Amino acid sequence: MRLKNKVAIVTGAASGIGRAIADLFVSQGAKVIYSDIHKKINDFKVSSKKAIYVPCDVSNQEEVKALIARAKEVYKGLDVMVNNAGVGGLGGILEAQADDFDRTLKINLFGVFYGTQAAAQAMKKEKVKGNIINISSILGTVGMEQTLAYCTSKGGVGQLTRAASLDLAKFGIRVNAIAPAFIKTKMTKDILHDKKFNQMVISNTPLAYVGEPKDIANAALYLASDEAKYVTGTTLHVDGGWTIH
Image (cartoon, rainbow, N blue to C red; front, side, top):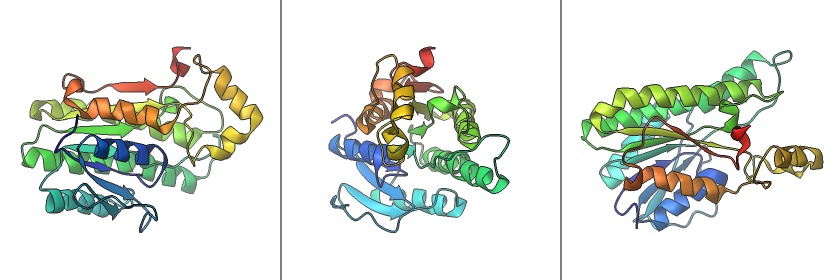
């Protein structure tokens, strides 16, 4: 039990990467608050002793603050914050719409800012040497055509992680990020089903296959555990080698 008695929040936990992380944390002894924008998760059946579900729109700062407060109310504190909630989006610089750009940054970048800040404030107040994990993307490191807002938001997540880790190191709070490549989730189902796009992904991945949510969950478990107690401010690329190029 690598997270025994730890309290964790995972945003975007209704499905995909977030769900895999939350489920793995529970199996490793953590008490987990699953959170997503949906009012409920139809297949959520975890006992309240191990986990609860709390709806939250991460683009709303007050809702994020309430989510953090819920951890203290139910489980008496917070040890791990996983800022996973995010959206995709297509469009290049010539046709990008300001409203779409703003929405993507509000969820993918401001949502991470809100979650990191609120979690860090709670941990500092309770003198908890906790850790914060932000889900970035390989597209925060490398560019891709027609993904302007997404690349911008995920690039910001990497820099936010680095800067926040310096601010919080003095309190023993670690801040790291994970940068997945294209992973088999509901969000990527349609584009990966396209044979041409799928082949592009495979050809750019030295390991020559598409990753699964559990690959990212395993990385999050490492960063959340004491095994990573000397790791902060880094972005761990879990990408089959994509960013080696």
